[in-house]
View 1 (cartoon, rainbow, N blue to C red):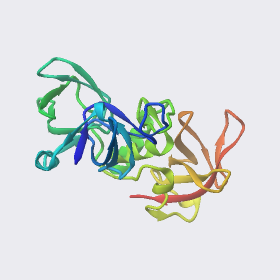
View 2: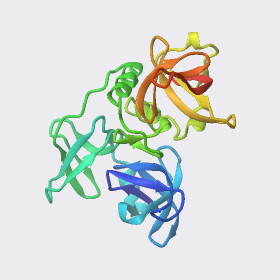
View 3: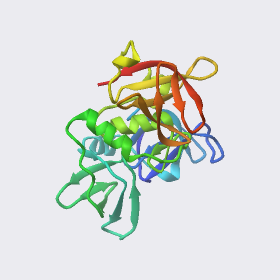
View 4: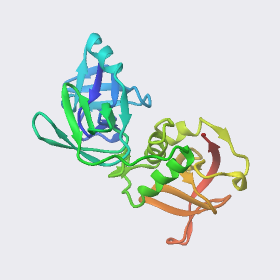
Length: 258
């Protein structure tokens, strides 16, 4: 059985209950495969980043094979802005976050479809640069001061790897969900002096495991989600916070993804 998110943001939880830790999120229009069903909860496998966790059955819609094949064949546009959509049938509003999937999107009318409903965006989506690096950096800068949220993947709350994943996704580049998974991709940059904008820097925790990631900017700077999305200094030792007057993250490696 397959399914789709019909809510703006669906918490993906470690266990099948509302009190469980949120590990990630499904965004509007994202699809998944159902692995297990237990008392109103579905253990799912995300088709976007292969993440597995539990979601409430009330926040998604499931499909049998034939209906799913029709849905999966539909073209879609990735939403590049935080937009309001209105149902043309009921007039109800939905907040559509960055990274959502808009099926059969029409740029002229700003309409799209989801599960037999037709919606219209109330504002135009921001245009992304054709150059992926410029687009990634533009997206990152637009998210300055977004609050940190463990498991978050939107401008309204994001964790470190959700931030880098979203910046890349809005510019037609796919990253895995977690920092340690992202670190397995790309090509190693041997020296920090060789790093380029939009490269990813990865950082160790106290156990020596990769637990943080950020986007490299120009002139020894990094933008990352730590408390909020912020810009700090970066050198061969790690991230230095001028606000705290100390290093906050120990550099492990740098990867080039593009």
